[in-house]
Image (cartoon, rainbow, N blue to C red):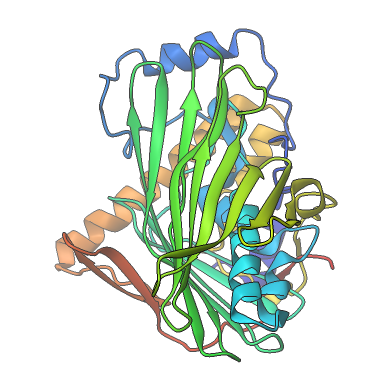
Length: 382
């Protein structure tokens, strides 16, 4: 039996991605683009890449579950707290817009990707009073659930994420399906939003960007925001552009126009007065990010992301690629064995922390079983 202390020593936690997509490992290898295209050469355009397996040489030393969580608990300027402290409904929605932008402001490193989480994998982290719990609630298709609570600021987040990557010859576009909710409990307001799409370009200029439309609604106040993420392969004024507006849904009246760049700054303009105001600065939001650490060794679960992939990450960080490949094969083989055991007993796996439903009309929905997330064994320095 694996003890909690042993789990803690096996855990590998790495620094969060920065605004420029930097990581713990230098992936500036020669002919990276050719290596990526060689791996994808057998994939037909339009194919769903959900089940596509990358060798460790193309992996970041962390799970997608960890990357998902970092968008919530790793930040410089605390845009999340502003959502709960703003006095008027309009200011709160404006703050939610800025915070929403901050959660998508860390692109992946071109040519590499995090591990695909295994079924039942969890990631449990605290930052101050913000406690965050993630669980991989489905493996085929991959679906991740997130629940976060902050009793002091009276915040709650419930997210469901189902990435669907498709290959289009010169690019991969990932539609991130699933509903995201931010609840401001003090005001009885729930903000519902979606995620932009992640675009990975191979040609003519390699790069990673966010594209597509995001809508943020609050039925309690009748206010909503519409955002459009755009890019230009040649950079310039239109590179990583955000445009949008905040409207009163009851009258369809535009209150603010939104414009800027998600990797730089975003401003709003009051349409009645013409007054401009800065609401988001990427350098402030994605700077000074701290690496999570194990605070309570006895609380670490064997299903924790940093434990599940610990040996693989050690191999990648040490550039011991055969060790990383063997460790990754071991993780994947163990999952296949567990699935066979469940099938032989006629058992259906069920998530530990979420109730999950799925329909063609509404997609995936993940509801937390407990009302609050408890303090985690892994912490982020304040």
